[in-house]
Length: 138
Image (cartoon, rainbow, N blue to C red):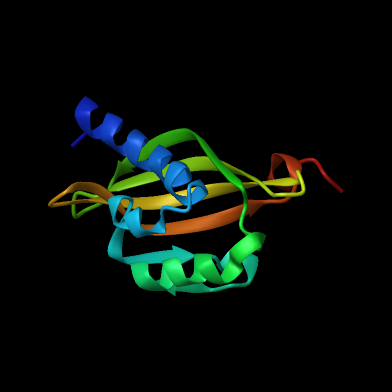
């Protein structure tokens, strides 16, 4: 079944809300974005998976000043439904650090419907390190 227009709008807002909350330091509101048992996969950064909302908030606090000062999420694409009715969503992220440097990632999300609406239950963060994903480079 194709996601409804209402679902699409809700998912886009959900993905956008992430950057606003984390940049504002409103980690106590993370349950508005993630399920309580979220799996946040940072393996591409050598940090493995963070499991659970409490662990995710603890990890963010532990990074302290090493966190980006700005998370910009763009290019949200709903790629399809899962067998259990969830949605596969991909988006691009741009993180700006306090020294002005920045980096780019791709977020690969599994979004599920819970009692309060759509939430991210799994997020894989993939670093963008080379142009064209290496295509055409020696």
